[in-house]
Length: 96
Length: 197
Ligand SMILES: [Zn+2]
Image (cartoon, rainbow over all chains, first blue to last red; front, top):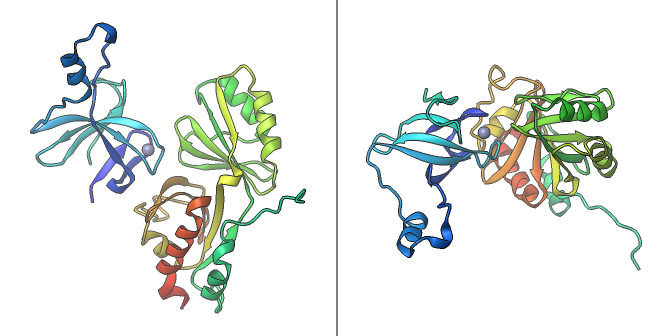
């Protein structure tokens, strides 16, 4: 089983978490003037990265908080996890 | 005419099963339900001195900021549930009073207080084999060096969400959702089978 480091609870078993898909997707601001294609892109289209991918994760059976993770989709290694909004320079927890 | 409410413990449906499992007495593993304990969910900004001050004044305890339990002299305890969430527990049935007192003290502060007593029940697990039984369905590292007495955290026991409180050396409390109580108890009995047979 994988261990995932929750920014608040520390290293925990994978079975306590659920994945929420690609991170850092920004909701369009002027949605009333948005084309159907742009809406479709926002709602449905996701990257299918081979390599390091930013994802949202949820500590479902723990503190029930969402956070972001950088994960390698080839090796499944979690490179780091960090609170949403902490961005590139925020508090992060490397994989052990 | 029913002008009287009779509370039913969440495990009432499997009472006989529970009794039958422990006919030989709780030797290496024991399980007792502590129904009707008070549970109040509290949320607020842990960095706000006004929030902390108001809560600590009412509860007479220091709110924990890590995965630990703090207790007051009057039998009230606070369990860390997340960075801005706590579970206030009491053996007395004082949910509505506690909710009211906290709301009054926190008026004007950004907060949430909800009496959730009826949604939960508590299992008290004890005995020499208690960690082994828990470990069958819970992925936490329960070694006393990692999860010592006074620690608490949320996890799962098979498919049931649980809050685990380490009360004493061989004594743990599980706070379980009422709707999951029967399931969690039956899974615990199954996990403990080899130790209570
Ligand atoms: Zn967590």
